[in-house]
Image (cartoon, rainbow over all chains, first blue to last red; front, side, top):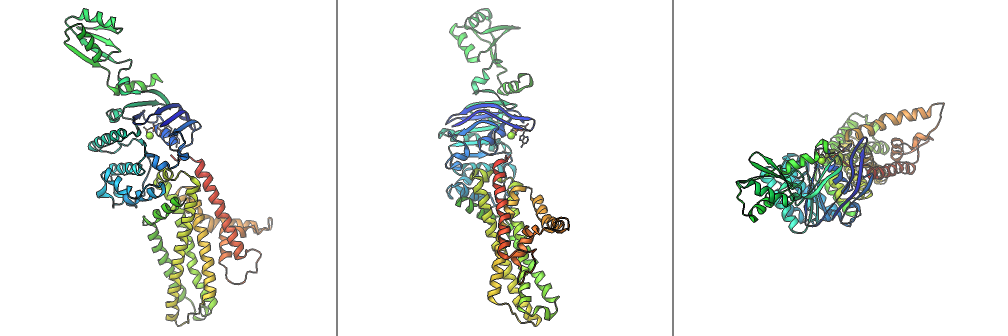
Length: 294
Length: 253
Ligand SMILES: Nc1ncnc2c1ncn2[C@@H]1O[C@H](COP(=O)(O)OP(=O)(O)OP(=O)(O)O)[C@@H](O)[C@H]1O
Ligand SMILES: [Mg+2]
């Protein structure tokens, strides 16, 4: 549904996007992650036809955004630095966009209710809090009832309840078969929401896979203790895992605790401890985007 | 295109900008009409021609129309609404044309209201001063028609300039610096013996003057009313095209 191919964008001396490629399939919520300045916003703006790439392709539903028949009703977007006229009431902001984007006028009140702003619909946006603005931005993305959603740091400014609401909401959208691409520089924010993550750093792809796959990455280790350590070590080595001793316990590299537990059970070995190490996604993320790796 | 135009129309009606411009316009008109009538000798405001000149006070509304055009466009960049605007209407040409048409329409509305107000105030102020209201329908209609055409062109020109310059204060300052300083300076240079050209009559302010001039024009330095409209229309077309090209080429980030 979303396809980015060998995309490049340079701002003066900064190579903001540097040969980036990835795809997003329908019904998937994909986290688009990277540290500050990684090129997330630039990539999303190119996808939406707001920024011109130097080379490469960025298409949605097989077409460039501006080539879509009814772009506003096919793709919804929330972008950083996308604004509101402070003197315009929220409801009017949406009416203006609905008219321009060919969305039915009745959607305005529907999306206001969806994001929980019906009570503040007649207030001028200048008096809105950051979280309310974020909800209004989300409402405008939903106006056209689009099948594809592109959200740049949508959780910014939301309170914990709002973040939780957003998470459930995105899951329900994906369950309806929509594709969602959601950027963040804080992994924990999207960890529970996304099916897959695309991690970029300095404009380049660092990793793309399911959350599970990434957690199982090369630094995934399991600490296991057993009164029958010798036998367990043999069984694990036979299964192809690299095992090292760590005091009383064993460290198993490249395995999940489930795998280790199953091997132990199949040989009726007793376990006293089974702890996954360094499998916090945050660590994987930091590791993947740290200086040495690039 | 129609969707974009309808959206622009709604945009202007849903902020208080237009309201405040109207207030400013009405206050300005009233002030000048009252001062013009009270401050004049009776005999200098008695003839139909003199009173037509007083009616021309409403043409000052053109500057308000220009400011409105500038605000319509630069406001999008100032508040960052250009991003949702472009998402809803990806065609840059549609946006520029919709803004130009909206600028035109609201300029005509603003200046039309200003003229109506001035006419009303004159109809009250002149008899109060003991002078008969002598303006006749025919010449007045022609004059007001030309003022409204100039206003329409300036409204569209303002929205084009706004997209080209983007910065709100920069655009207002640049426009008025051109009108009241730069244009006059350049014309003085063109008129100097070394160059001796009257090309300055094609400039926007001079062209506007040509559209609004009543009666005789015996100088080669001023265009006919039609020539003035063509020249000002040319400027409007130039800035509209520049706006399309720049809005299409520039990154919005
Ligand atoms: N309009 C611009 N002009 C110049 N440089 C820019 C512009 N926009 C982005 N950049 C640069 O491009 C790089 C990528 O920026 P981008 O905004 O895409 O990062 P990001 O991943 O969205 O970061 P963040 O998490 O802080 O939002 C940065 O080095 C930034 O300074
Ligand atoms: Mg960003």
